Length: 432
Image 1 (cartoon, one colour):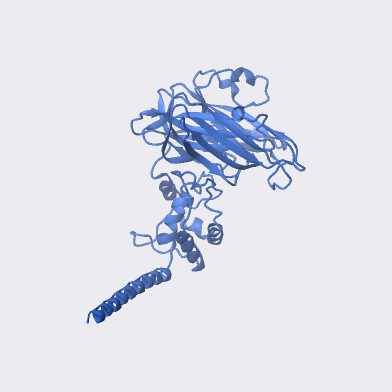
Image 2: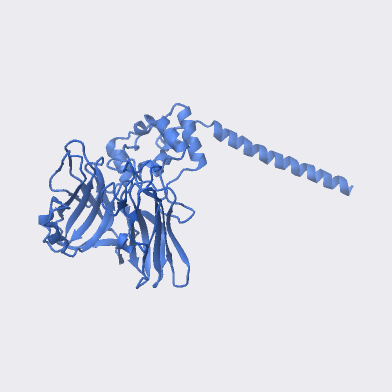
């Protein structure tokens, strides 16, 4: 009797397990058979990972993906680049460090996009609206900005004429801010007026009121030296490079810009085959809540390289190291922005504490010049007093590097030209 009872119990248990498995299979099958529509399934994925960070009007993406029409006409392309994980781009290794602005798609999200495309890219009904969403440009822009407009828009005083002489062009521009009082900036956005030709732009702040004469001045102008002797209030307010978008500082922190200050833009234009123009603008968003700590910038440059000289001989794959420290005071890191040119291959940065602990900052195993970002840490990273910040980068100056701008390869050193190289690490931080 006891054996029969146990046997019967096992049979009942197996039946219950089989029923649960059947329910799971049925639910999975039902989900797989559920029609996939843009409004219900694809729109949230695109908004979060594609439209909001990059593909919106004036964003770093080459086209907008804020409306159904924007997405549907590129359905085949989107299905392909997401399937092979070419998009959304996020070069940093997320097993090395995590960031607040990470972008990636799960296998389920990729599958939803594939099924939506295979079904003919249907729009479907808007969730909770009972009908189709009227997605005008204004409505889409509101979605992107979540109802927020910049508090101050600063445009170059006039359009700059880019010569079509196939030469690199480095210029400085003076942009009056007309500030009557100090402002606390919690977000900064740079909008290139000629995205095709802009190589980079560096935003600086002058508080002396003596820099107006630098407007439009070339990097090789002998008069520039006089202006470069003037100390800047902020030598690195923000840096725009391909792939970088609006940077937003954590709540309670901001960059302070003093009353009477002006912006100085340092812009590098790539060679142009024909005359073109540029009139870029800067958008500033002021802090709406009390600011407890001021954001500061620490920049490691080629001067911090320990195995000098910074020279990449032709047909070599050199590696360089740079260090900064020990830190005189503890800091809390907000973000990290590495920078190299076309010969860059890998980049890694970390901090070593006085106790020998390693604090990971950034690791990129496949450098992509077209996608450089300000990686904002998920949480502020505390780096103790006495710590040293270290970075290492590798380069490929051989003919095997398809991105090598020099054919045949030649010796390359430091410089701002696209054919030169750089090794920078920019950190936003606040004091402990």
